[in-house]
Amino acid sequence: MLYREAGQFKTTYIRDQELFPVKQDRWGIFVIIGISFIIVPLIANDYWLQAILIPFLIYSLSALGLNLLTGYAGQLSLGTGGFMAVGAYACYKLVTVFPETNVIILILISGLFSAGIGLIFGIPSLRIKGFYLAVATLAAQFFFEWLFGRVQWFYNYNNSGAIEVPVRNFFDIAVTGPTATTQARYMVVLCIVSVLALVAVNLVRGRIGRAWMAIRDMDIAAELIGIRPFPTKLIAFAISSYYAGVAGALFVFTYLGSAEVEVFDINMSFEILFMVIIGGLGSISGAFLGAAFIVLIPILITNLPLILGIPINSATVEHFNFMILGALIVLFLIFEPHGLAKIWSIVREKLRAWPFPY
Image (cartoon, rainbow, N blue to C red):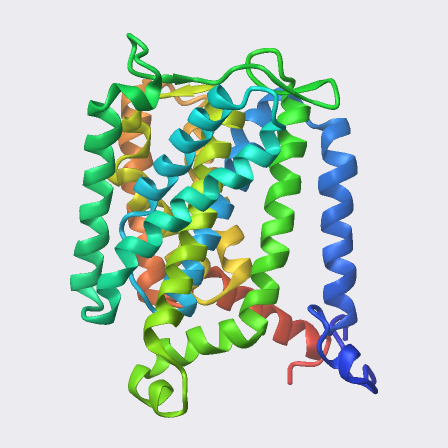
């Protein structure tokens, strides 16, 4: 019985409200944190950090923000890519206007601009929901693509039309720009994602998270028991947009180095939505599991022919990538609509009874 919970009694209210009430969960989180902060920077090479771990963490953050809105509050959004673009361009303007300010602080502040935009586009949620609300957020996606591509002020009248990340230091260590090491950028992303993930866990376990789930399950009944739908939905849009804005800033400043607005197109929004669906709606861990699935599967498909020694050109591999990934998404929706988080929940139930079959 590897996952035995019997005997783990709570004798105080503080112990009863712990984020990870089961001892095995606490030790598992401590092990993951220790590996992420200590072991990975020491043993991982630049390829693993730049091509796998940094994008995985950034996608996890954006998927986490969308999961708070869609999975917990029940408000469908297709504009995550647009909100990420707001955060990226806001951070770029802040860095150029305030060059002496700590870039990590500016990354966190840039999310506030996305939160404000999310509040504006969350106003229609009072009147519409479901497919119609998704169309409204999709309009935001197209609007920001047009805005940042046409108004040259946002990219400082650069002839290339791209935003280029300058070198910025944190305690005399370059964390952005071409001179920043992958280890430094990885640690910045890891720290920000860890803090915001902890905030998300606290949110969904508190009064705000319970109000979101009440609105999601039955908004009329939630209103009858005293929950105000409009401010509750607006809070969900604001927090979700904040997470997307910070993820967008990290995506450009710690991963790409320079980017045009086409990076945050509709494909980005759908990709993050697929992460939430595959990982599991209404699950914090599901955002990380879905992001890992979407990031790792294409890398596996790309490298598998090389490992097996199969001669195949890159264009064919790219087509197979889309086909296999799409087929896996469809299979998940058919056989396990609750996502990878549900599979992990089933595994935990089996571990509770192991080695007994009941």
